[in-house]
Length: 268
Ligand SMILES: Nc1ncnc2c1ncn2[C@@H]1O[C@H](COP(=O)(O)OP(=O)(O)OP(=O)(O)O)[C@@H](O)[C@H]1O
Ligand SMILES: [Mg+2]
Image 1 (cartoon, rainbow, N blue to C red):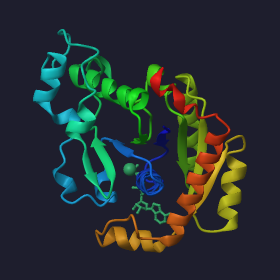
Image 2 (image 1 turned 90 degrees about the vertical axis):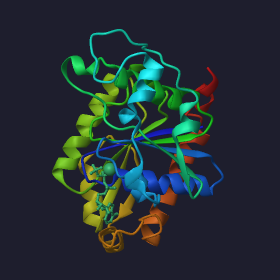
Image 3 (image 1 turned 180 degrees about the horizontal axis):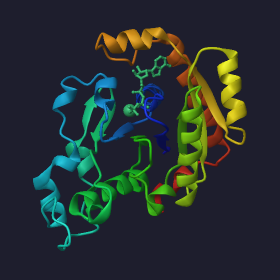
Image 4 (image 1 turned 45 degrees about the horizontal axis):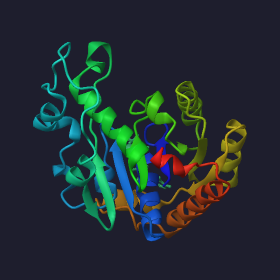
């Protein structure tokens, strides 16, 4: 089962692509778990979950963190389990809406001794479990960096999709993310161009990102912006954006048919 991670500069459309791809995979008969791994994430709302603001991220579940790791969150320097039990968490702590399962991870502590703490141990173990041992499609909506992925989990990612929009900063960011990914051994990288308004936009992306494989291009659609401002769910906001995402799904499956996505590593 395909494991997909989605990265790219802030605001390029990572969350929208995660939500729409989750929908296409679900409609195609796959069991899908979408993961919000962005600390300021809004994947739940984008997927149209009711009361999305009430969902508590795993990183804030203090008693769960203590129960599984043996230490209270915020404690550093003490002893805690580096491999806590997590295999029951996707069932226990995911929500479901329109056939799509969702887990909200919350914030990883970064920098200094904060990196080495019980909440990170639990989140890392959970992401690792989701990528390595789940028999379903996993789609990870990440922050601009790819902090949730480590060397061990990177190998389980079948495709890192870097979303780009026409603009220099997004292109620069794509190179940075791709370098970070390669540093941890993640070589299966592809790009998706979003918010494309003209053939020139598309040409700009292709020429600025020579060497990147493009899975597809998603048009800019004002309907997305209007629906977003009206506070309505984005999943059905734009037929032409949805169609472009279906093409991206087809492109992903085509790579898979060639065997390059190695989904049988689930059991190894
Ligand atoms: N194809 C599109 N056409 C028009 N608007 C779009 C399109 N894609 C995304 N948007 C809008 O751009 C904004 C950013 O999209 P989104 O939240 O998916 O990006 P993101 O990369 O997840 O951002 P963040 O880094 O803040 O999490 C949203 O307001 C969204 O509605
Ligand atoms: Mg987002």
